[in-house]
Length: 84
Figure 1 (cartoon, rainbow, N blue to C red):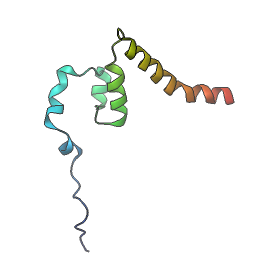
Figure 2: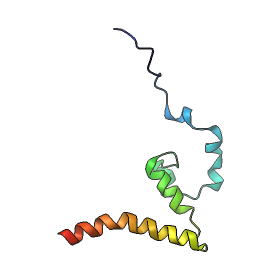
Figure 3: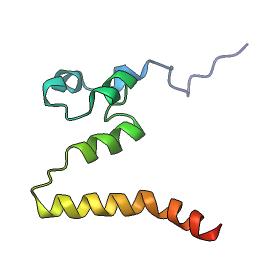
Figure 4: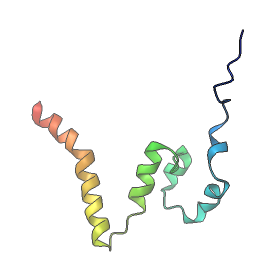
């Protein structure tokens, strides 16, 4: 077989993450279930969860963002239910 030198060698994903990212465990606002499932802010689902769990209910801008997230994720379900 021939080898291609124009393609990067496949490496584990954790090699691309900065080492300080793992040291932030004490500042991590994720629920324990998300930590057990391996969802971190470096995954797509974990990034949304990390963002939503870092919102502060005392700040009006954060409350507005929480409502926007709720509408964004609930709108397709409501639309499907209305179509049925």
